[in-house]
Amino acid sequence: MSREEEIRAGLFDNTLNGRAPEVKALTEEGLALHMDPMDILFKALIPSLEEVGRRFEKGDFFVPEMLMAARAMQGALTLLRPLIAETGAQPVGRYVIGTVKGDIHDIGKNLVVIMLEGAGFEVFDLGVNTPPEKFVEAVIAHKPDVLGFSAFLTTTMPMFKVNIEALKKAGIRDQVHIAVGGAPVTEEYAKHVGADSYAPDASMATRQAKQLVGARNEASQGAQALEQAVKLIDDTLKKG
Ligand code: B12
Image 1 (spheres, helix red, strand yellow):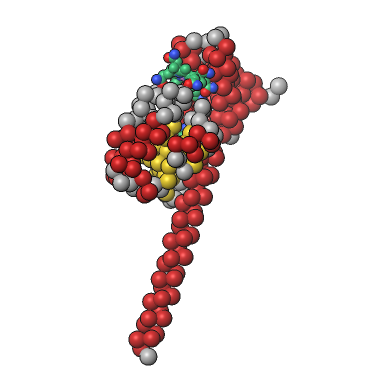
Image 2 (cartoon, protein in one colour):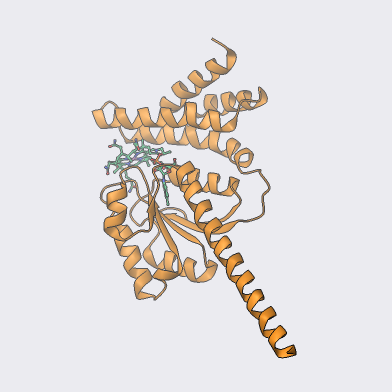
């Protein structure tokens, strides 16, 4: 086994067992060996957290174990975050995101934030347990291209609809693209509540946001070109 494979295996085991100092040390060592931060994330840390979920479901793990695993993972994320986000690109668009009211899960949301920042988005992260009125205020204040709702519990997913109703009431629903996600969310559920898109993971969420903003920019460039052409024709006609 190469040292890189040992590090991946060590990250998996130590995250699973909630050993934060070991996870931090192995992440540092992996980075010093020039391991790809995305590799550390997707081939060691996330699979470990998925295993935590499976054990919780079976009744082998309880909330304290879940919490310790999450803390261990977050220590690693603190180290990985700047590296993943350091592309230095110009802001390509704005994204407001938050975990819905009643829900305090944020690892999945934080990963979406990291990937969006890495792709050059200006992200306004409203955190966890976000009430509908905070989303409304943020849309008015930041005028984002996309508004993202995260929910990780079947009992908090209905907040998507509550949030959308709050935006409708404020008369701003049509000003923003609404994306939803989170472990229990599905494409069908997203359609059912009237969201515009759903993504199962952070990279798909980022790809979709880039496509949306890209299409808008092209449309506005097209509109600008048309406007210039019309102006040119007008000027020519005026001159006779
Ligand atoms: C860690 C964890 C916790 C930690 C959270 C720590 C934290 N800071 O987030 C703690 C211990 C606090 C916790 C608490 C609870 N938890 Co919990 N938790 C988990 C666990 C193990 C991992 C979640 C996670 O981080 N996954 C890893 C991330 C990377 O994956 P992800 O969430 O799918 O995120 C990706 C996508 O969803 C997507 N995405 C996410 N957000 C968005 C947003 C947009 C806009 C888009 C487009 C995409 C997108 O991109 C992400 C990155 O790729 C899951 C099990 C699991 N397999 O999911 C249970 C789980 C979510 N928890 C569960 C439960 C029941 C609870 C508690 C109710 C337990 C209790 N009895 O107290 C409480 C609820 C507290 C509350 N009010 O919120 C259940 C939910 C069951 C259900 N169907 O409702 C799960 C599924 C465990 C299980 N198998 O039963 N939990």
